[in-house]
Length: 591
Image (cartoon, rainbow, N blue to C red; front, side, top):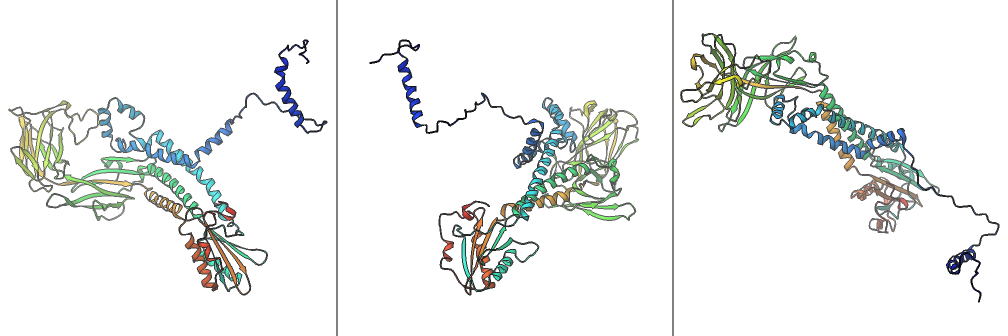
C-alpha cells in the first residue's frame, strides 16, 4: 500500500480532499471529443454591474410626448377635466354672483380666503383648469394625427388575399351556378359594393390564379376607426368651441318696469359679464320698451302663462312689436332675450318733513314664494331736512289680515297691501362702497319704535297716503305696475358646440356598432358549371356574419342561376373542425 507523500505541502489529508475534483476532471476529459488542436475561446468577463443608458433631453421629451398623446392619458385628462369642473357648480362664481362670493368668504373666514387665492370662485379662468384644458387639447390632437395617417394608409391597402382552404372557417358555404367565372365575379362585386357607388359597403378586390380559378376578397369595418377618429375630432371641436365662446360671449340682465325700457349698452344693464375678447362696440344699439306684462294663474295659484309685450327699435328701422314668453325667447341684435322673472313695482311718492318731494318712482319688490309675497326696500336719501329715511317691508298682492299677522293668498293683485317698517339715519350711500338696491344697510340706521317698543308698521293700500312717524313726512301709493327680469345672451359658439356634440355621438355610435367583417369567394370553373365556395370571418362574435354570407351567395345565385350544391357544401354551417369562428386563414387571428 502506498501512503501519502510526506513531502506534499497539503499534508496527509490532501488526497481525500482532491478525490472529488479529480474525478470530475477525469469525467470531463473522457466526455470531451474535441480534436487536440482545437483552440477554445475564453469566456468574456461580465461586468460587475450593468450600466443603463441615459435618455437625455431629447429622449425624455420624446417619452413625455408619447405618454401625453396616448389614449390612456387622454381619457385620464378628460376625466380630470370633469372633476376640476365640479367646484364651478358647487361654489358661487364671481362672474355670475359676486355678492354670493362675498357672503361665502364672510361666512367662512378661514377657508374662504384660501379658496379665493386658489381660484375656486372663478374656476373656468383659473390656472389649473386652463392647464388641464390645454393638456387635453394637445393630447387629443397628438393622438388623432398619427392615427389618421395610419387609417388613411389602411384605407388605401388592398383587402387580404383569399385563403386557399376554407375548411378551417366555421362560417362557410358553397353553391354551383351555370354562369361563367367572370359573370360570378361581376355579380359578387356588385352585391358587395351595394347600390351606392360612391359609398360602397365593402372594399372589394379580385384576382386570378393558375388553372382558371378566380378569387374575390372583400372587407368592411374600417368605418369603426373612422367613427373613432370622428369622435375624437368632435371632442376637439367642443374644446375649441367652448374656449371661443368664453372669449367672445356676453350676457346682461336688466329689470324693466311697464312703460319703461332700456338700451342695448353695457352701462344700461343691471349686471353684465363678457369674455376677455369681447368688444363693447360690437353690441347692436337697439332699444326695448316693455309695453305690457300679462300673467295667468290657475285657481290654485299655479302659473300658466307669462307674456311680455315689447317694442323693439333697431338702428335705421321702424319700431316693431314683439312678444317674449318663458320658453320662447326673442332674437334681436345677434342675441336672444329670455324672460327670467317678474313681479310688482309699486309707484311710491315720499314727502319729507318740509313737504318737499324726497322720492318718487317705482320700486321693484322681489317675489319670495308662489303667491308673490314680495320683499322690497325704499331708500330716501334726498330729504331737505332731517335724517335720511329707509322703508323696508313686504308687498302682498292678495292680502289677508288676521290677529296672527298678514299673508298673501293669491299671486294676482286682487287686494294688494304694503306692510312697511321705518328706519332713519345714514343710508351709507355716500361711503363709496357699492350697495345692493334690494337690501338696507342698517349699520347707521335706527328702527323707529312705537310706545309698546315694537317697530312702527305702516299698512298702505293703492291710492292711500299715510303719515310717517315722528313728523318725518308722508308716503303715497300711486299705482302698481309690473316688472320683468330680462336676460340677454350671446354666445357665437353654441351652434358649433351642438354640431360637435352630434358628431361625437354619431362617431361613437359608428365605432361601437359597425361590424368588422371579411368575405372571400373562390370561383372554380368546371364542365358546364362553376363552383362558388365562400367563407366569412369576423373580428369578434358577430351574430350577423352568417346572414351576410347568405345574402352574398343569394345575390350571386339569383343573378347567375343556382343549379345545385356541392356534396359537402351545406355541412359547412354546422361543421366544427376545431377552428374558432374568428380564426383567419391558416388559423391566424389577423383581424
